Amino acid sequence: MQSRRVALPTAVLVFSLLALTGCDKPHPNATVFSGSNSVTRAAICWSPDANRTFTDSECLVQVADGKLSAQAVAELADYLEPIPVKPAQTIGISVDPEIADAGWTITINSRPLNSQPISTTYYRFALSERDLRRGSLEMRVFAAADDQQSQRGYWLFELSPEE
Image 1 (tube, one colour):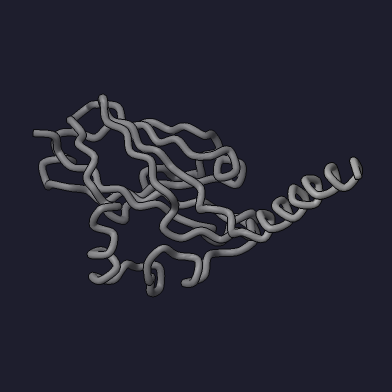
Image 2 (cartoon, helix red, strand yellow; image 1 turned 135 degrees about the vertical axis):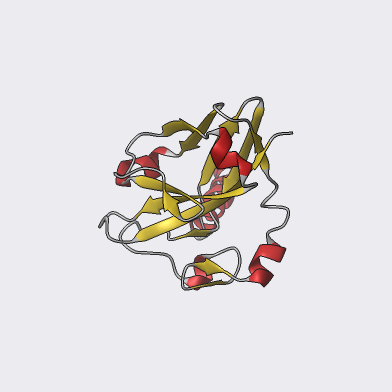
């Protein structure tokens, strides 16, 4: 009788662990810091396989050829809440170690911010008054796949001049 009481909770625990292993792992996060503001977001698109690029089905919204449609941007309105930044203020980006291991890059308004992939979990930079004079800037963080030829996933942030 005593062995049944132990066996049932053990069986439930084993079943629960097996059920959890079948669940999709959530997209990893990236965090952007500026002054006293910080925003953490899940990747818009993410491949669970480190050796390949993401597919449309692995994106939070519909992405065509790596570009967001107007409908996708509307769906992401809450996701894209702007991050206020001041000229010359440090902007920091923090990523999970899994992303740093394969390397990652940053673009601002589609222009590369760095010439070589970043291999650390934290990167910082500043924008000039001239950069911010044009208004809000789109910043994308791209995670490289292990082959270094494709993008495993990406995050989207909006940097806006602080008033």
